[in-house]
Length: 380
Ligand SMILES: Cc1cc2nc3c(=O)[nH]c(=O)nc-3n(C[C@H](O)[C@H](O)[C@H](O)COP(=O)(O)OP(=O)(O)OC[C@H]3O[C@@H](n4cnc5c(N)ncnc54)[C@H](O)[C@@H]3O)c2cc1C
Image (cartoon, rainbow, N blue to C red; front, side, top):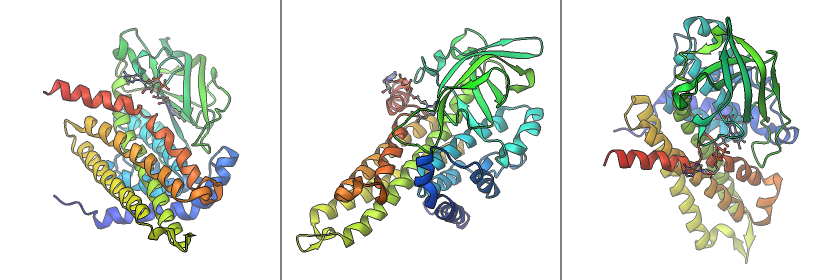
């Protein structure tokens, strides 16, 4: 067993970190205020191979492992978790197309996806179905030359901003087996968007409803086989859960490093506040939580890379553990900054807001426990 990163993995982390610090961190607050991420950033990230991190090399992707990808998200989220998480969603969709799309679809779609000329959104949630995703109602009726879509997707990251939407839709009434995945390009007649949601965090990312009104797509835009879309969506989520955990980890690490510095400078009762043993213990506790989270996350990623039978359970466990550890740590870091932690200039309050949603999306942390408990009961 070797816990060390390879030289190549260290280089991947360093490259992502350097890019984030130079091109993302200085703008993170203004992008948040503007409520959008300038589209020019995506092709720059794609030049580093981040437009198809774990898309196979045969398809033109970077062919990285899921463990490698977590390093990219950990490093980028040190600059801004909202931007890093948006890139995760694009990559989740890109991998679904690579893994399940036809050769024709891959040849047609992937080149622009990999350069991020085409930015992708993932559309599973609906106003009436979130955790119970298989209850989705958006219909895709078969026509002579394709499908006609009707329905609404809710909470879509990149809704009205992305160039194409990977959508889970109902092609029959057979529960989860009646769900298919389709690819819908921006500009398709019948595709429209709700107003921008006003949110607590992830404010640089546009979030909106995606609406289909007799939206007609060609048959070639079916991803993979009819009736298998729910499985595709869930497979995408295993890796998505690792990425979102990595985003919590990187952001929390940044907050902890800033707090360590701040505590050396801030004085109270005649000494710097890092001299109070009660506060030193809190620093130590945060370090322990983040190191444990990192080790657990990388083990789960390794399991997914190995195709281990318990990979889904480990991804779920890691997602719950790491996102909660990340939120606890940034909240404590805010506390240790005193009143200054509450001010936007110190950069901590944004992280508290950004990380909160990581406990809700990609499956809530309650659903993560449902997955773990089901597995335990099945295997006892
Ligand atoms: C900012 C943001 C961005 C998002 N981006 C996307 C996106 O790009 N694409 C996408 O498809 N979706 C996206 N989502 C949606 C997100 O995945 C859902 O909000 C999430 O899955 C929860 O669904 P829900 O909101 O309908 O909550 P519900 O499913 O209604 O859950 C409500 C509460 O009940 C709990 N609960 C539900 N079922 C159970 C159960 N069986 N056992 C125990 N507890 C249970 C939940 O954990 C939660 O606490 C986004 C959400 C947000 C907030």
